[in-house]
Amino acid sequence: MSGKPQRLIALLAVLQVRRVTTAEALAAEFGVSARTIFRDIQALIDAGIPVLTERGKYGGISLLPGSQADLSKLTASEADVVRAVGFDLGRAARLGAESAARSAAGKLTAKRRAPLRGDPPLALADVLTVDNRGWFAADESPDVASLARDLRLARRLRIRYRHSGAAQSQVYVVDPYGLLLRADRWYLIADSESRPRMYALTRLEHWELLAGTRCLRVGATLAGTAAELSRSLESRNEITITALLDADRVDIARRILGSRLRSVVPGPVTRGSTTVSDTTSSSNEGGRVTVTIAFEHLNGVRQLLQFSDRIEVTSPSEARQLICRLAEQLAQTHR
Image 1 (cartoon, rainbow, N blue to C red):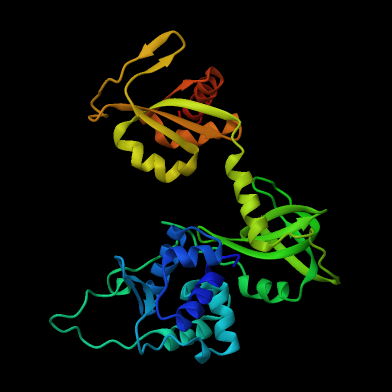
Image 2 (tube, rainbow, N blue to C red):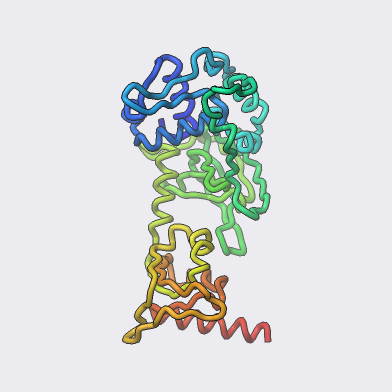
């Protein structure tokens, strides 16, 4: 299976026909790690599917005997939306398929009675809720449902797209694989002149279907191409910044910088031939740590301005100079 939602419904199908199995056996069957299988099982439990997991020599993974998790009860449209987005009702709604997702969840979720003394622990779904939306994220709501409907026709598209930071949009003819949802943001994955590209739907101004059938690279798939583009984006780091950061800002830095924050080390840092000590100040009761941050290019240092006086870039010298110029420009603007 190429993606998690497809794997979830396939897992259900396997659990229906087997009395009990193990994470290791499922991992071998689906070509993923046992850790991934456990995450998938938790996703089923989160959705209210009556999956039991037992540790020990005679343990394993199974469906609750007599449960309602019967895939044969699903209509074609219900099964289709579960394969596409799993049991996430919010994402199903963005695709115009909320009613089918709710119906599928209702058919596959076991009815519960009030717990009695001596009953096993509550299901994970009873004590856990998941919201994948980013904090303070604006609702940009691209027309995902309409685009998904057109993509299912497997035809070429002519799109008008504005790249990040560009004032004007450009027109491309692309061969689309489909849609990627990552961190609550939607992307169109497509080949442009036989090269894979990722287009953010918030900057996709227009699309139209063309008469020709899409022509994809041999052997390429939606999941594989999306993973390839993601790895390429996250590995494009050409400059490493070293800085001193107030210790009480490390958690915020992890949240803002993500994988760009490569290391956090307590203690002093060397700037040229000078050692900068880990001192404390009135604004930094917990001292400072040394951090290394990777950016695609030097201008990425601008992202560090939001830490204001809670950070000091120590190397390379070009980064320090850029910070100085930006600070002077800001001061002049606000003077």
